[in-house]
Length: 297
Image (tube, rainbow, N blue to C red; front, side, top):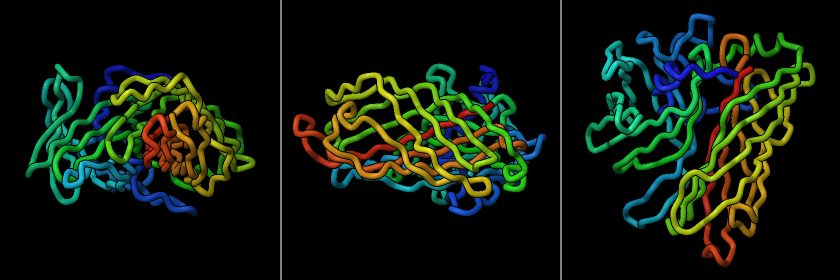
């Protein structure tokens, strides 16, 4: 895997959510207006419109609590530049927000109709066809978390491969108490293996805490993406974590929704979501876990 730093920050698509249109168990339709990925596809192309979706942690101001919420939006480059970086149009719930690069804070940001968006680039694949990043939305639509998306792969391309592919990239998790008493974010290297002959994919994300509040301290730990079958260009599976490491007495199913990206299925990304219960020393309440990963060959 190679990450070009200059393209890395262009990734505004950091703002995209969850890999495009809602993942279907049989086949994921194109996540870009032009169709599935081609060798010419580029997330900074001003003639392109992408749709992304993800589960983020939504802040409910009226109750001062959090919940999981599905976000879907479109994003496209405007063709303009600001601070020598492309400008993007991000439309969420019918509200268009122009995102421009803030050099001091190293993020894309914009405000419109009471909705403010900050988009932090994490990773963009070498050919600029998929990206991963953190997004924070302020206002009534307020939410936070990781998203992944880009130009997804034509299912016929995925079906034509019969090799074993190794993918390396980045992944992360955000964990927050429903009552807002604690929050923590972790990230690290993602490693996945896809066996196209058998139609299976599995992997790990090595996690190190990088932020948080409320006293929750999570040691270096591993999230495992359990082996699952993929159908056409998409997959729905589960992940496993060390509950104790996350300060949880239990956690239900951690869902993984993912798909293949780029013209030749040379990238893979997905989102993570789960609900657990904090240990007694961490308040014993409901906890939401959300994340995403992206890796390329």
